[in-house]
Image (cartoon, rainbow, N blue to C red; front, top):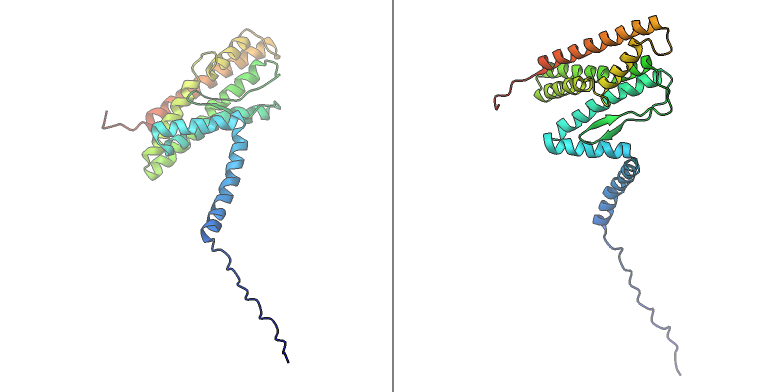
Length: 225
């Protein structure tokens, strides 16, 4: 007489989940970095933003990253002066484009030449840049920061240089407008055009003198020299 016994139960073994704390940690770190990198690459696809990065890196290599950031911001404020004034006049300027080690520019396309408007837009850059340098000077003196004083001096120098009456600089554009107005050209009458030429000349000279005085005040003697 035989007896039936149930077959022995198969032994089962549950494999534990692999321990991946490092991978999870790396994933949490890399995910936001990749997202930021994607945004930067998208922005860098535009020459406008690519120029900013190259300029910042170049200035940082020469003078250190703090001065590099401050110098690029001073240039940006200068160009935004052109941009804001152009928008105020109802024009359609493009965003500032940086050219490493040469500066930056704001392009105006398909705009008929008007000497008075051209003078205002051209002078707005050195004016805004001078205000930014003045802010660095005042705050630098308040907190006794040589870095800010150096930026103030550089800002005054940069904007004064831009007022030199050479064709591609702001001063060259202002000089061209002054000549047209002085000759009685433009949309205004001859008498009004000549009066506006005097305003342009007085404003430009006064701005240049103010920037030069700012350089004198912001100058820090160097014991090493």
